[in-house]
Amino acid sequence: MSKVMAVNAGSSSLKYKLYDMPEEKVICSGMADKIGHDDAKFILKYNGEKIENTLPILDHTKAVALLLEALTKYGVVDSLDEIECVGHRVVQGGKYFSKSAEFDADTEHKIDILTPLDPLHAQAHLLGYRAFRDALPKVPAIAVFDTAFHQTMTEEDYLFPIPYEYSRDFDCRRYGAHGTSHNYLAIKGEEYGAKRIISCHIGSGSSLAAINNGKCVATSMGLTPLGGVMMGTRTGDMDPSVMDYLATCTGKDVHELYDIFNKKSGFLGVSGISNDTRDVEEADLGGNKQAHIASLLFARRVADYIGSYFVRLGGADLIIFSAGIGENSPYYRELILRDVEEALGLSIDYELNKTVRGKEVMISKPDSKVKVAVIPTDEEVMIARDCYKRIKEGKI
Ligand code: ADP
Image (cartoon, rainbow, N blue to C red; front, side, top):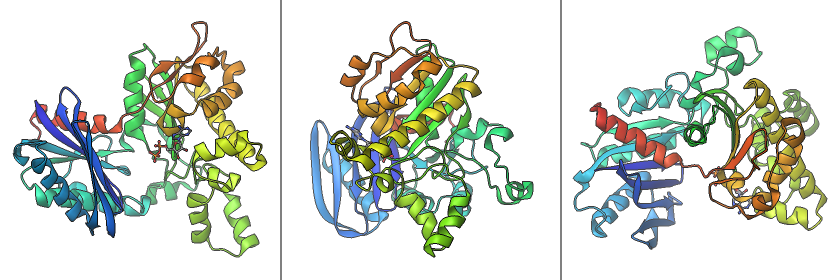
């Protein structure tokens, strides 16, 4: 048995799960939240109990120190030497990484120079990595990239129709995101005998992927996670001239508008209520018109991508719904499926759909031309699997 730690470091949070591999058993999990504040939280879930402390956690180094201290203090491990590998989630791997990589000085450098492509996360990932490296200098680390799974796309799927030298000189192209989740869903989909899979990872950030024989052929997010379908606060795809036109109308500059497209649009912007679909759905069902149009707009965008990927794959064997909305919202699943069912020959058990929250269930009927399933995603276990693979191969 090998113990490996899956880590997801954000700018003010650090989530972790300790696994026993290859059993994929979660030994403990938790997070440090509000890092940088005096009233930060440290949470450890172990043996059915939740230990929660509010205290100052001023940086990632402190968060990691608290975690390692807690592991021995609460008897999760007898010694920190039991941890054989730490796997870090990294959002942007750019053109450099088509699979997970050993987290060494070279990987660190590449993630650093990719910061302009992911200003929100890149430096936070590095803070998380350095904190673990300094605290556990003998324990090897790997980086698992959200973009890696999408590196199998071909040029006609990943290039933008801009002057070619911009793509060539600035690596300006589609990278996608949520690749670790889409990869997990592709593996789950294969358990149903599906070769052509449309996976819908729809949560506060949303993306779809077209997967053929386990490989991604197209995905909806673009250069950054702003592209693709409408999301909690992001626009998704738009006519690029919206930027110029709104700059003229509002007097705001490109950076302000870019920020609005990222943080104040999507469900939040259209509904004027919330970025959380639980609130928007409630308002929609209560008769709020703006909430209703936000719901329809979202469903239409997702449906359009499903249609496009159905064509891209030459048909589909399985459509998967996953992530916060996909796993938990019968309402949005139904809105989306009603939009595509006729064209795709779907037959959906909508009564069953209403009962499905957070569990794996086939919601299509046996006569459906394409199967439709709800499958909870698990990005952390993919990180743990990559750690274990490397241990087994003796690469680290
Ligand atoms: P993240 O992108 O942060 O990982 P998640 O995949 O966890 O996000 O999705 C979070 C979003 O999922 C919430 O903002 C909300 O819109 C939606 N969501 C979560 N639970 C429910 C639910 N029970 N019903 C409807 N929507 C939900």
